[in-house]
Each structure stands twice: as structure tokens, then as C-alpha cells.
Length: 202
Image 1 (tube, rainbow, N blue to C red):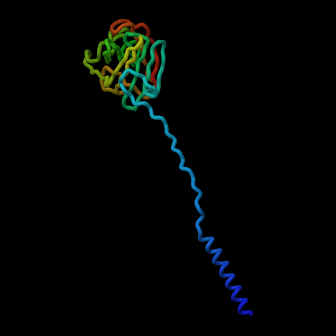
Image 2 (image 1 turned 135 degrees about the horizontal axis):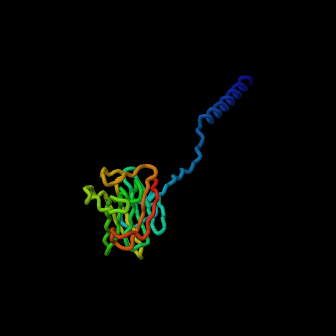
Image 3 (image 1 turned 135 degrees about the vertical axis):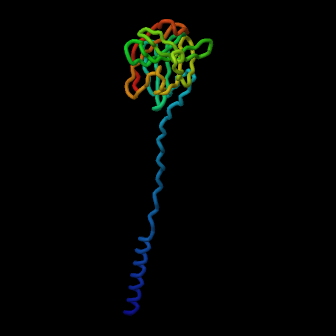
């Protein structure tokens, strides 16, 4: 009897140990988790010289009366748009001094569906401001386009921040003084309808 009792006790003990050991060896069933949804940031609209200011195409903008300027930069080039309530020319100038003297100008207009953009430089306080090429410089407008719709003219252009041309003023990080203006017809030699001063922050 004692031997039988011992055998039963040992067998029970062995089963108990096997049961505990088996439970420890089993890996817990993983709880399925949902994959995190990545946050998609909206991409800026690619710049195109088509005379249309698209949403997200420019990082910054300013409005002065009936004249608007929009711009963005990639550290090498400036991409800009000028828009004014006129069927004539629109312009902007990087102005290092007083009035118009030594101002680096970009004039644009649309005539019979054709866009003209001119790189100019003012030689006096009130002009004249002939094209850079007429003064021994170069035309540094790399791309441009424009539209004239319902009495509103829009000009877009691309230029290097630093061109190396004596008749261009460098655009530098920080504040850059500008003159803005627009005229009533497509003749850049005609006086502006409205003009003023501002700053571009790059």
C-alpha cells in the first residue's frame, strides 16, 4: 500500500510540474494593433510661368493698392508674380538708394495675347530706365509668362537672386527694399498710374 501511494503521489507531482512548465513555455498570443496612418503634408504647387497665380504656388505676398506681388525662393532663384488692375504694364524694382536711381527693374505687359518682360536699370532719380542690354548688361529674366483678363494683368518671372550683372541688384536673405508700380498702357516709357515702396522679406 505504501508503495502504491508513493507511486500515485509521484505521478501527480510529475503531472503538476509538466503542466506548469508547459504554461511557461507558451508564448502569449499577440494582440493585433492597427498600423499608424502617416500624416500627409500638402505639397506646394509647382511654379509655372503661365501668368496664373495658383493656390500654394507662392510662399509670400503683399498688396499695395491695386498692385500685388507674390514671391517664393529656393535659395538660388526668386519666382515672382505681379498683378494689377490695369490693361497696361506692371513693374517691380529692387531699390538700393533713393527714389529710382540705381533701381533694378522688371517691367511686364501683355499685348494681343503676347507677353513681354524687360530687365531694366534706372540711371536717375526719375529715370530713364533702359533695358540692361542697352547699357552693356544682360537680360537675366530666365522664364516668364503673363495674362490679361478683364482688365487685370498678371506677370510671372524667374530670376537668380545673384546674377553677377552690374545692372542687377542682388536679392539677399532678409529685407529687400522695392518700388512697385503700374501704368495705364503697354508703353513702359509712360508714367505710372500708381506707385509706392515696400519690402520683400526673403
